Structure formats: structure tokens, C-alpha cells
Image 1 (cartoon, rainbow, N blue to C red):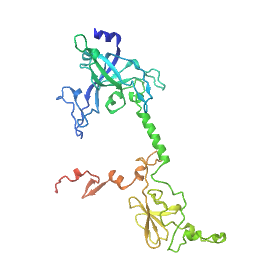
Image 2 (image 1 turned 180 degrees about the horizontal axis):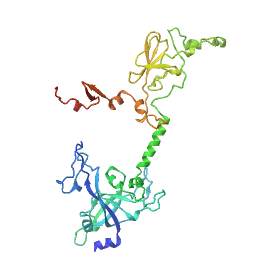
Image 3 (image 1 turned 45 degrees about the vertical axis):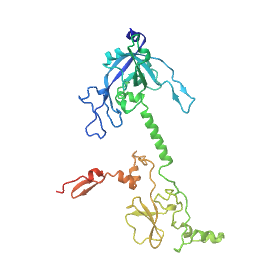
Length: 383
């Protein structure tokens, strides 16, 4: 009689039966309990016993139909608290216990995915030709108080369901064909993953335009040279000359000599670009040039980060280091080819050590330079 009430007053619910976690592959580092014949009930298996979760779930390809009853409610926004909270996104759905066992071979359990065909949206605002489906996942199962008969025996089960989200656990559900006829999947229609990726890419693009490299850009400012003790006139002495005629006869070297020090002392505030001030030409290489002139700049590229030196007439003095780098791992993008060359720009001691993929040849044997300590310190035969 109770089952007949569900057949008359209930609605069809499509059940995607949960079959248990996916068996892990050999060599996985995370402790797992694979689905083997030793586990007679794979639904009760735990994939990761360290975090006590089943990240990879397996679902029955066939869909079961069960009659269910729940109370319809409007989705109202609660504006009385900070932020927006959905009060009615949780659905409490009732099923007949014996009907579940006869249909599924067991009762409803957490992990089962429910598809509600009567909540399909046939009038989507995009160009899809199929109705958008509504999925819920079972979080908890209990025996409701109104499911006990006069004989004190339970006849109903109540499933606490929440809307299905695009996550690793339900990748098999979202990989199903959408029915649109163009090869798209449910992930393409129901998931916001692609939209989130597009928004994130646009944010990164705008950030790269606003701040292509770290620190501050001060190369566009003109720096007045302040040189003393090398035969060059300092700017302080030149500023004392107030007569216009005297200023017209001043040597241009008073102003155009190369600056001999950092004007902006903050870290990566334009001094960390490895470029001389005022657009002074400079050379680069792995060794200093012969017979340099006073005030000449030279960038040593054999240092990491690169170091800019200035010759003061007697010796080479370090001016600054090229410590500015791109703000992301992608770096700048070549518009003509569309490729990112940030890996060549973002070069520091840390990134070159962590991302070291080079090899070295030792005694005729090619060895990867980056190795874990547990593999390097293993005993090896000396023959």
C-alpha cells in the first residue's frame, strides 16, 4: 500500500548507481584500498585511506528509475546576513525502501547521483538544442520518522541531496554525451569550468598589461649624473652656475655623463632591470671588454641574475642586478607566434634549481642534474 502511494503520487527519479571508487593503478604513492575480489562490497571501499575520501568514483552505465517524493520549494536569497545564502538548495527526497532494494539491489546510499527529469530546462538562453538537466548527489541517508507504520517497522528512506557540481568525483557523469548532436558532453553544458578558465585567462592578460614585470619602471626618467673625483663636473657644481651665458658655454659632459650610482634605492624599483640609466648603450658577455672607457656599462650574463657593471676609470663597479621578472609563469607573449617565453625571462636561482631539466654526462653516462636525495644516496656498485 505504501509503495502504491509512491507510484501514484511520486515522480520518476533517474538513479546513477554508485559502484565504488576506481581501483588505483600500480605505483601510486597514496595509500589506497583497491576494488578487488577480496572486497565483496566495493561501494564501501575507500580509495584514499589517508584523507578518507574517494576522489575517483565509478558509476553504473545503466540508469535506474525509482519513484520519489519531495517537497517543492522556491530558491530564495537570504539578504539578512553577509553575502548571499541559498536556503533551499538542499532537497530531502523520500523513497520506498523495498522498491529501492528491488531496483538497485541495495538501498540509496551517499554517492548516488539523482537526475530529476521533471526539472529539465527546455528553454535555455543559449544556442543549445537539448534541455538542460538537473542533477543532485546524495549526501546522507536516514530513516524518516513518518516512514514507520503502526507496526513500528520502517518502510521509507530519506536522502539528503545537494546540487551536483563539476568536480573530480563526478567526472564520469559529466563525461556523458549531451545529446546535442555536436559531440559535446554534459560538462560543456552544465559546468562553469570553461567560463572560469576564460575569466581567469582574461584576468591574467590584463594583469600582464598592467604589470608585465615585478617592481617599478623608472627607466623613462632622466637621471642627472653626479660624478666626483674622476675629472667630471658634478651636477651640484653645475647647478651653482646661474648665468645664462655661462650655461650656454658649459660642456655637455656635465649633464650627459653616465650616472655612477643607483638613484632609486628600493628593491626592483627600476634599478633591478639590468639596463643603464638614460638609455646609455652597453654591451654584454661573459667577460669584461679590453681597454674600456670611463663610464662604460657592461652586463655580465654569466651571473644569475645578470649583473650590470660600470667602469669608473680604474675598476669595474657593480651597479645593479637584473632581479625584475615576470609576475607569472607564462611570462610575456609573442604576438606573432602566440607563444610564451616567460621561461627564458623568469630566471632566478630558485626557479632554475627547481625547474632544472638539463642533463650532464659523467664517465660516458647521461645523468639528470636534478635528482631526489633518496635516489642519489642509494648504494651503488662501483664496478
